[in-house]
Length: 437
Ligand SMILES: [Zn+2]
Image 1 (cartoon, rainbow, N blue to C red):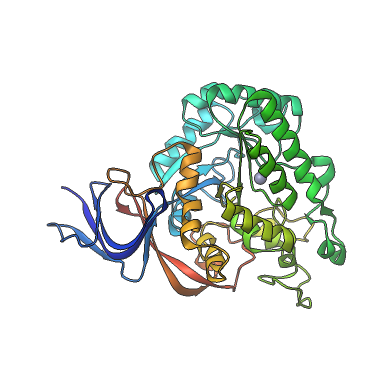
Image 2: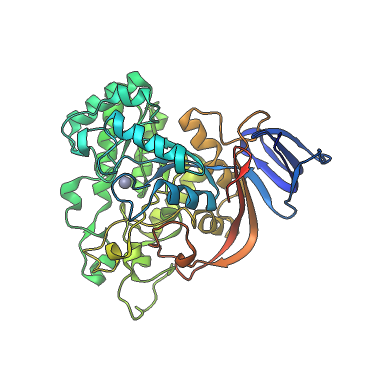
């Protein structure tokens, strides 16, 4: 039987085609069939009333941690992709810091098989750069490329050795895939648990300076120039990083970068308690371990730079760095706590605050979640062109809701946004024409 869904009367935003208008959208057999002002209901079509809602391409997340295999108590491919669907995502790229790491064919094949069996959306694996992510010896990069990995990363850790990074960029240039680096000079960040600044001083915590990121970004840009390889800077977080990337792009270097929702919306002050953008007296808790993330939440000036650079295009797109952890990983001192935030289900709501505050156009925001990551992947997704996959996200831009991690589908309840009011909610997500949320 032919499956048809008619989405009626929504505000259709597709930045890839410059579409922003009230229209109907028809999906037939999993594919976008037609966008038109008024489409009459075909026989047997399901109707979705989208009046007052935004209808856009499904979001694409280049950077998330699904934890399977090896840490299924934190997340699985099933729970992670269901959480992603709830957050409006129809494609996620899975980081290889699993146990074992995704450094050989059998682990990547396992992830692909699990995704086929249990995922509600598209899962694209990322291969690790080095064997066991130990930074000593390159993984079987071309074999991993044959399986369809979209790039290589040792994320969670940087590729520390410059010569290994040089070799990785040289190989990946031949494979036409990026090296995605978590830029952090270990000796500059050793033992640090947050940004180095006045909050770390006040709390007596060791901080990591912006230089810990920027020194490696500068190195990687230089190595990309040397090798002709493509370096992608994961989770850019400092003003200095952006300055380096801007000038490298102007020189024609193959460098791209992403920014997370939290580095666009939260400052280091959040470490002292949720949602606090300006200094407020400490509450009953001196700190919130759910705000411990790597790279750390930075200064107000850094956040302003992230927003501006996303608007101007120096930052290529938004990626979540969804990093779910169990309660025991976070019910600790700040120093002992694991790094990471569970992001997938709050991404849109938190990003919409930028739109609400007039800091970003909703079209730009959607472009940075759809068309621009699709360009990075070189895939024909993230748009609503006729004949493309019916990956569609429907948003209520005006619904106000309170973040309750107890409601998360993700196993990771670790969010510093607990109790925050967000405006903008995912109402439905379609993947290949089927409603998955
Ligand atoms: Zn990372």
